[in-house]
Length: 110
Image (tube, rainbow, N blue to C red; front, side, top):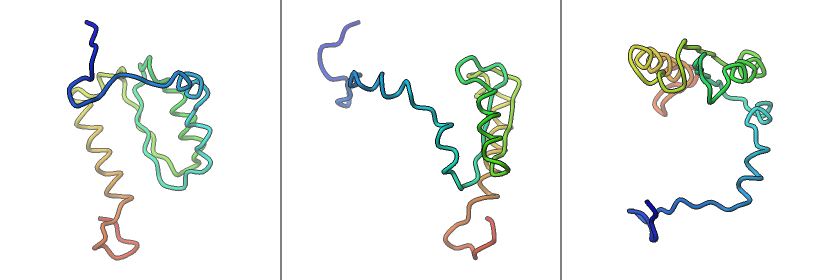
């Protein structure tokens, strides 16, 4: 179905042509050296959209500042039970471990 006007909310599915050229050379792994915060990586071992080996490589490059969690699922099944609840629990633990509220004394995790 071809739409001739703006979609609901005013959004239109358009991008500048240069985006294809600029994004094709972009790789987040090139910027890992500047990351100082703890990072949690979650990968699906049967993922055909995001190669799990690249996720392992990224975690290795962070030399101890990263947690890596791997699930024997594909890209989308990771959002289904029981994997989803396990993944959410791990993310919650990671955030509790590394984030403090403004009411917490320095050095104490929430």
